[in-house]
Image 1 (cartoon, rainbow, N blue to C red):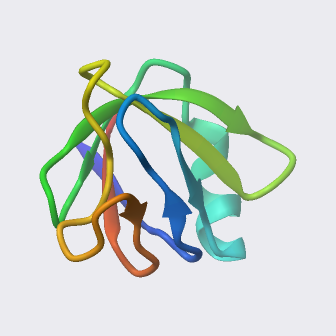
Image 2 (image 1 turned 30 degrees about the vertical axis):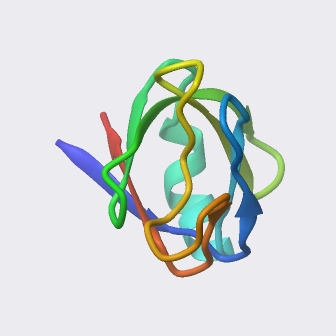
Length: 92
């Protein structure tokens, strides 16, 4: 089973760098409590994968580290940036 969330604010995502996923208040209330460090995430537009490295349970964001150290989590339409409105699928 997978959870799908939508990125609200564009976030820099260069090689080897964590991408920050900003959620709207509804997604934050619904999904953040069930997220855990280590869960696998996939960026829908680019099929890039990574693992959750940090969850802000009191806020509205979490970070994803690329699976490969030289990889990135950028959207296919915006090199170096995880674009707003891109969908992130999280394996539960």
